[in-house]
Length: 129
Image (tube, rainbow, N blue to C red):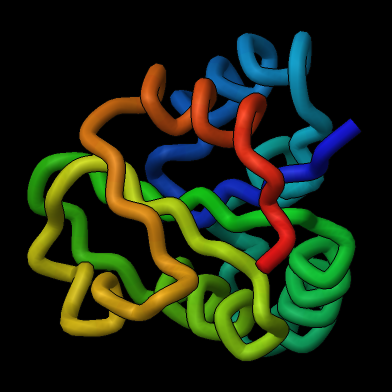
């Protein structure tokens, strides 16, 4: 089964848990942060361990799905997307965001309008570049 990592803001974790439940019928969702994240965990002391875990999960993923809701300002999600690109993995950007800079036009980046399009793409497309 293909594995996908969700990259977004901590504030979107609840929504992403819903998407994980929906997508898990077709794909393995390997972004554990959406299950374990708390505001307390987002501290300098906790950062080394959660970044190590996130990077390990991205390494196992076939692709990273990056999503910004409305006027979200992405930070960590951009690091995760960049890490995936550096590993040669595709990054799927959902919707439009001011955070998707010129990197969204890189060869490995796929821009799709909706979550439904992204799910269909991940199911039907060979995700390795």
